[in-house]
Image (tube, rainbow over all chains, first blue to last red; front, side):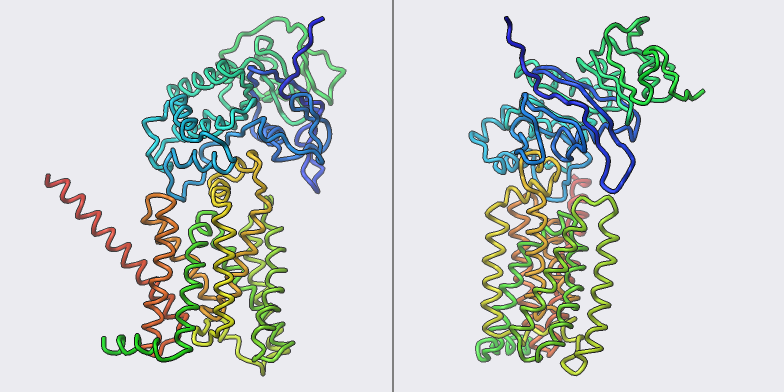
Amino acid sequence: MTKLKAPILRSNNICYSYDNSNEIILKDISFQLFAGESLGILGPNGGGKSTLMKLIAGLLTPTAGELYYEHKLFTKDSKFPYSLLAYVPQSSELNTILPVNVFEFLKIAAKSQILKNIESRINELLILVNMSHKKSSLLNQLSGGEKQRVLIARALLHSPKLILLDEPMKGLDSSGQDQLQAILKDIQSAHQTAIVMVDHNITQLIKSCDKILCLNKTSHWHNNKELLTKNILEDIYHCEFEHLLIHEKESIPNHTFCNHDHKENNQHKHTFIMRKK
Amino acid sequence: MTTLFSSLSDFIHYEFLIYALLGSLLLSITCGIISPLLIARKNAFIGSAISHSTLLGLSIALSLFQAQQNLYIFLFTLTITLLCTLFLARSTFKEHLPTDSMIGIFYTSTMALGILIHSLFAKNKGDLLNFLFGNILLLNPEDMLLSLALLVLTIFIIFIPFYKWLYLTFDEEGAITSGINAKLYHYFFFILLTLIIVTSIKLAGTILIETFLLIPGFFSLKFAKNIKQTFIYSILFSSIFAFIGLIIANAYGLPSGATLAVVQFSALLLSILLKIVYDLTLRGNHEIS
C-alpha cells in the first residue's frame, strides 16, 4: 500500500470575519496544496484574497475552520510554523526610508532570523533572482520589479517549503512578469517549494499556477486550472469577460463548486450571479 | 566671540553648568539613537502625542506633591504618562481606523485635562509654562544619573535586537511571518519613547523635546548612505549641536531648550542649503566637462 504524501498546506472550511462586525469576509474555504505545487488565488477586489493570504501567513487567525501545515493543525495556542513558510508582501509596502543596499537588506533579514552562512547564501540567492549586479544598490533606487525580486530572495533565505506572494506582478511590465514567472518556476522545481500567489492578472496566474482558487467572499471554486472555465470566472467576478484567454470546456468533470448560499443549484447554472451587461 | 569663550570657561568653573552640559550630552545621544528609528517607523506624531500627554501626569503630580519634591514628581509623571502610552500603544497597533486620528484625539485630550487639573488643584505650585519649554540649568546630579541609566537602557533595547528593529521598520508583516513578535517591539518602542520624553522634560520641555527627537534623525536620513552612517550622523549631530546650543544659551542668557532647538534647526537648514549648492555645482561641472 502506498503511503499518501501529506499536503504542505490544507485549509478545512476556514471562515473569517472582523471583530465587532457581522460581515463575513470568508466562509468555508477549503483547499490543499502539495510540495512543488502552485496555487493562484483570483477574485475581485474585496473578495477576501489578501485576507486568505494573511490567514495562511499567520497574520490573522480564522474565526472558524482549520488550517493544517504539513498535517499539523494550527490553533490559537500552538506555535505558528514560521520556519515552514515565507511571506512576500507587495513591493510597494516596503518601507525604504532607512538607506540600505540590497546585500545589507538581506543580511539584516538573515541576522534577525539567526541564520548561518549568511553571505554565501545571499550571493547564491541574488544570482537566482538575477539581482547580483545590484547588490550594492540602495533599495529605494530599485524599480518595483527589482524590489519584488529582492523580496523573493529574502523569502528564500531560510529555505521555506511554502512561499506566499501578494500580487507579485503588480506594476510590472510583461517582460518583468515573464522574468518573475521564470524565477518562481525555477524555485518551485529546484526545491519542490509550494507557492501560493494572489494576483489580478488572470491570464498570467492561470498560465503559471497548477491550481486555481477563485474567491469572492462566500463563494469560491477550487481545482486544477484545466477545469477552470470562463463561466466560473464570470460567476465569481460577477461580470462578463470578453477577451479572456483561458481554455473553455463544455463540461467540468469532478470539479468542486462551493457556493454555500445556493448549494441546491445545478453546478453548471450559476443563476445567483448578477451579470453586468 | 569673547562672550562665547568666556561662556566656555564658565563650564569649568560652575558645577551646575557641568551638570547641564553632561546631562544634555547624555540626553542628546539618547535622542540621537532613537531619532532615525522614530522617523523611519513613521512614529514622529506619536512622540508628539506622548510629550504632550506628560502635562497630564505633571499636573496630577504637582497637585499631590510639593514642587521641590523632584523625584516624586518625576516618578509620578512617568507612571501616569506610561499608562497613557500603553493605552496609545494598544490603540495604534494594527487598527482599522487611521492611527493618526487616535493620536490627535489622545494628545489634545490629555493636554487639555492636564491644564484643567493644574488650574484647579496646582495653580500655586509652579507655572506649567516652565515644563513646556524646559530649563536645563535645573539639572542636578540625580538627573545626570537618570540620563546615564536611560542612555544605557536605550543602547540595550535598540542595539541588542538591532536587526529585528530594522526588519520591523522595513516590513512589519514580513517580520511577523519570520517569527518576530511585532507587538512586543511596538510596546517596547512606546515605553522607551516615554522614558526618554519624561526624562528630557528639564532639557527641552514637553513641546521642544520633539525637536531633539526629530531633527537629528531627519538630518542623518537626508545625508547618510547606509544604516551605520545613519545612526552615527544622528548621534553626532544631536550631541554636537546640543553642546553648541548650550554654550550660546549660557553666553547670551537665553532659554536653554529654545536655544538648543533653534541651533539644531539652523544647522539642519544650513546643511540642506549647502547640499543644494554642492549638487548644483557638481551638475554644473558635469555639464561643462
